[in-house]
Every structure is written in structure tokens, then in C-alpha cells.
Image 1 (cartoon, rainbow, N blue to C red):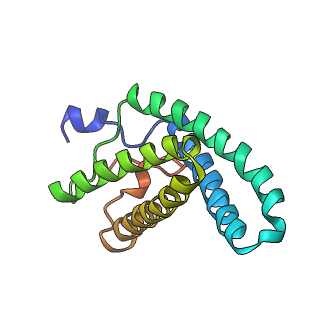
Image 2 (cartoon, helix red, strand yellow; image 1 turned 90 degrees about the vertical axis):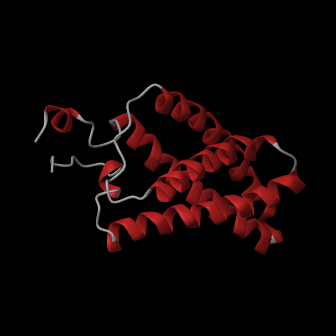
Length: 152
């Protein structure tokens, strides 16, 4: 094994992993609240009183997360990922960061359209992680899980 391979980062930093999973929980909560708001007009104002501050919290965390991501060395993609897969992963990352930032700042009508787009992007992200975890088995998920990954 070369010296470069032994010193390469295997995982995202602890802070990046913490922010990822905290935001994942917040976003899933937000998606559930959004669906409930559409389905239940009787609880709309209660749900809105949770939805708004949670959205502001996500906005603050996405700014912190983006700054952390831009100032950190990232682990390499698994070698099994093709160039088109890497391009798609990078493009979806940009889309998710953009939507997480823009979503709380736009008006209600556009917000609804972007919420559907965000939901589709989230499903695609989750599907890609499942594919790489269950089918390709290439260690992609190891980059972001809270536990330590042993060098391969």
C-alpha cells in the first residue's frame, strides 16, 4: 500500500457527519410536517408554527455545513464509481445545498414547487446510497456513518 493511500481521508470529519445526520433528521421532520400541512387544514397553524422555526434552523445549519464542507478535505469517492456517477453525485450535492438554502427564502407558491423538487432530490440521494450500500457494496456509506471505518 502506498503512503498516499494510508494518509487519505476515509471519512468526512466528525463535524460534517454530525451536521449531515442532524440535518437529515430535521429535513425528514420538515418533509413530514409539509405533507401533514397539505393533508390537514385543521392543524395547519400548529404545523406552520413548527415548520417556520425548523426551516430557519435548517438554513442556519446549511450555511455552517457549507462553510465546513468548503474548508475540509473530503474523502475520495469509491473507485467503483464511474465518472458519470461522480458527476451525478456532485450535481445532486449542489442541487441539495441550493434547495436547502433557497427553500426558506422564497415565497409560498415557489416554495411548494421547490419542496417537490427537494423531495425528488432527496429520494434520488437516498436511492443512490442504497444502491452503493446494498448492490455495489463499495463503501460509499462508510464515508458518512458516525462510526470509524478501518482502512482497507
